[in-house]
Amino acid sequence: MALNQTNKLVWIVETIYKARKISFEDLNHRWIENVDLSGGEEMQKRTFHKWKWNIFDTFGLSIECEKSAPYRYYIENVDDMRRGSIENWLLSTYSVSNSLMESKSIKDRILLEDVPSGREYLEPILEAMKKNHFLHITYYNYWREDTREHYVIPLCVKLFRQRWYMIGRRWPSGSDLVYCLDRIRDFRLSSHIFEYPTNFSPRKYFEGCIGVITGDGCDIQKVKLKVSSSQANYFRDLPLHDSQEETEQTEDYSIFEYQLRPTFDFQQEILRNGEDVEVIEPIWLRKEIAGKIKRMWNKYNKEQ
Image (cartoon, rainbow, N blue to C red):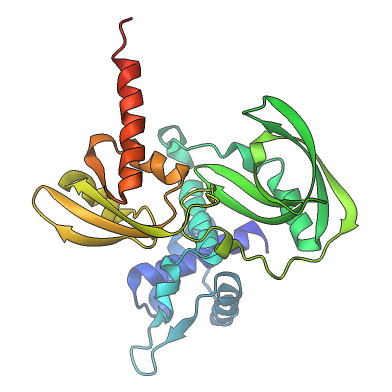
């Protein structure tokens, strides 16, 4: 589907979503006003019904019409727009793309973050995943400061903090590793194909995890955080994990509970919030964070 066509579908979804319910006449009026997409021409009703099906196929959203006057259109499964599916991610991405395309006159006032690893290798990796082809990659390791050859099955990809990662199963060892795409130094598609392992589930692999470190040996457990009242607002707007529950709220702080794996990535999230977040449970994690803070204090407390 052409980019311009997808942008039109996104515009329809957004317009109906913002209006909650809207008649075809009002939708068509707003369509004509958006000259960049419509060219100033009316939307034909048969075209709209065709695009309704395209919207369902592309984003999984069902647009229905009221059974009686005023016969307004609405998104029947609107809750699906808030779930972390690839369809919702695509919808959000194209939605932002539409806004940026309509804002070229103020482009110098729009600051974006780069996603460096997505340009060169993401597309061929996705193609390899679709066709079940092995990959030859040359990968740079930060800790060893060297590059090594890997022959892998591309199992899945994940975006985290503006970087794309691939989970690859090494052959012949069968071990699964997480590869950051911007550390790939060379890439070659193999002619050999594989059968996707039926016992591997990407969601299960990252179950209870924040980020890309799965934390072998670190079980899912209850974590309790005490968050300052000012910082708690940010936690409510953007939860650290989908298991987040606010179990207590006072004027000074809130208590948030989670069921997750407190791996390195999660610990970094805690430290990133500084003095506004305190680990209450489990005790081993509280001691771990306290140890990191103490070591940081010792570094900053040294005489220069």
